[in-house]
Image 1 (cartoon, rainbow over the protein chains, first blue to last red):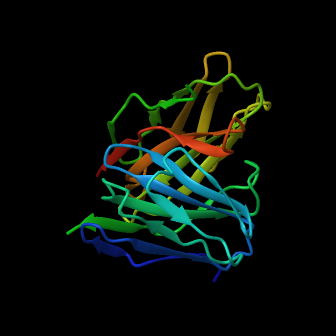
Image 2: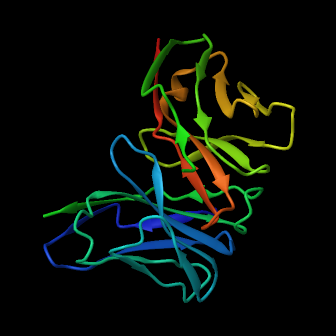
Length: 114
Length: 115
């Protein structure tokens, strides 16, 4: 079955540590996205990528980094510069970035501070 | 600001009855898309329904329908014959072409279904 796989489901970060969240899709989608969800709030866009080897900042990119070396993969690194990383992170993909093509979401990763 | 507002943090409805979730938005664009997503306890985001702004006809998907009022910038979701499986957080979202091409989400409405 095609879909989006996020791992791990739960992740803990120590002070000053960088952590990487994995997102893999087998839908053959060109566009991929990372969102952050805080309690009582909707999703906010961190980064998105329209094509391999290209990505753009979203609304809250500070303290995060991404790469897009393969079409199927779009990992998100939460760096030590992100002072409030505790949140639920969702990865999504779509055929392209036009709104006519809906975004499909993974099951998410919950990141907490130790 | 390109915002999406859901004024009802929580709603509840009796099973088999109808409930309407409200959403308003702000935009200076003439053409855009609107969405309702459902997030059950599993936390996965599931697309419920989509509306293209240039279409006057309201979108319908089985028990889910929208009331799209473009002039009022209103986009409400009606769920008919509510089922226990409809219990979830519901997010209204708008796609914007300004800056990063992205979905802008509202804060969500938690819907409870009473048996």
